[in-house]
Length: 190
Image 1 (spheres, helix red, strand yellow):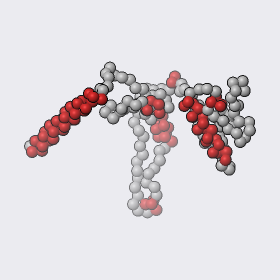
Image 2 (cartoon, one colour):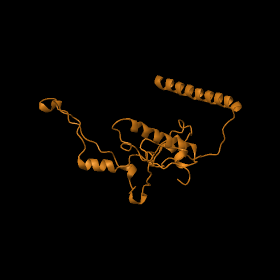
Image 3 (cartoon, one colour):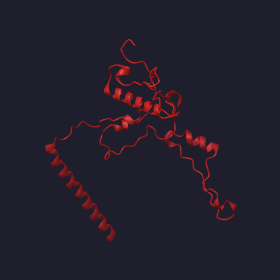
Image 4 (cartoon, one colour):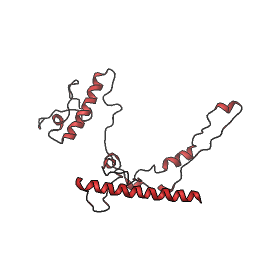
């Protein structure tokens, strides 16, 4: 190979010698470490499958090929307002049908309606009090539907300033809880 790398299958990392596998910089040349680690993992999976009798190197593996969704072909009108389909449960207590499954399935028309609904991709609701802003959700979403945006310009507090801020917030919270408990106590008495 001109760039002094090994020639191998791009998916299984198996070379032209069936018992030799490659991965990382040996296959791609110098790149990012994370790419080398990912290729090494895929090569290790191939090696594991190779040494197990009767295993296929390709069946049941994700090729991780990204195909962009053509948004021009979708009708997004009303996706968030389409109600869920439901089926009625019919319970029989006597006769032969008493032991049959009381949970019916969707009809074909109901199934088509239900599957045409948007299942929530991109319609995320994030609890701002639970989110720590790590960005993990943005990397896990396969459709790039989540993005983090700073809504106000503020900086973090230094460690020395942190303790007084935390204590101040604890006191405020305890005060609010106390006021709420007192209000609830007076409301019960009335």
